[in-house]
Amino acid sequence: MAKGRELKGRIKSVENTRKITRTMEMVAASKMKRATDRVAAARPYALALADVLSRLVRPDIAEQFPLLRQPATKRKVALVLLTANRGLCGAFNTNLIREARQRVADFEKQGITVELHIVGKKGIAFFKYLGRAISSERIDITDRPTAVDAASLIDGLTDRFAKGDLDGVYVTYAKFQSALSTPPTTDQVVPVVPPTTQGAPRDFLLAPSAEVLVEALLPAYVRNLVYRALVETVAGEQSARRTAMKNATDNASDMITLLRRTYNSARQAQITQEIAEIVGGAAALE
Image (tube, rainbow, N blue to C red):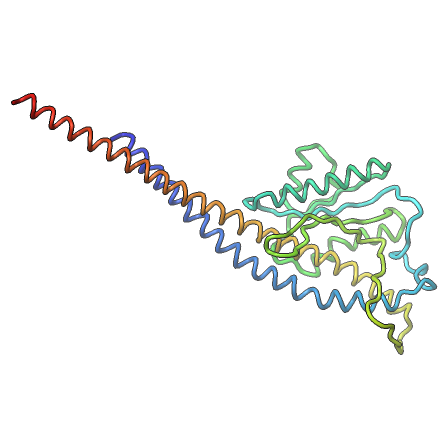
């Protein structure tokens, strides 16, 4: 019955694995709910900020603000890649890394130097394995990113853009569309492209002037873009992990069913053999 004992051991091992994956699925589902709540909470502020900015930025004042400067030619840009610190989330990190590599290749084909700024252990480990230079790396941003995290990530880059050291800053992240759709996306953060006005024009009585308001709103708008990229990436990570753990749990259940059938068949064959041996022995005694 050595084969039967081996099968029982494998069944027990797979059952233990299923308990772990089921627990991880439940944890990921809980975290995903909180992450999607943060995504939903960030959208009204972002829409209001974009609406106000779109009505304040006019061609006659746009030239006064460095963050609105559109370089004639691009020589050097920064790409911020957002990945996860942990795995077990399917192809989530792989897709983000693939998107970033494609963007880097596109820029370099145009003769543009690319600085890599990476958030998350998975992205950092991959590009270090390739031997690619990383300008900055962050692993301290948790699955509950804050506006302070976004500011610390982007403020230094926007200052360099304003001084002319960079000609653009881009962010690669997982755009959260639904629990089943989080495509990797690369957006331009600076230079800021003013949002288009939606709806009929409105008349404003401004105090202080439009220039003062735009100067205050532009950094907030840029930080909000990065903050939304952070929270959407977290939501996409937890969604991908929940799906991956659910698939693992289902596969473990299928494997247990198959192993139990194999075990029962082996046990039935052994019992049949033992009965045949008893019958044969009785016949020999007669």
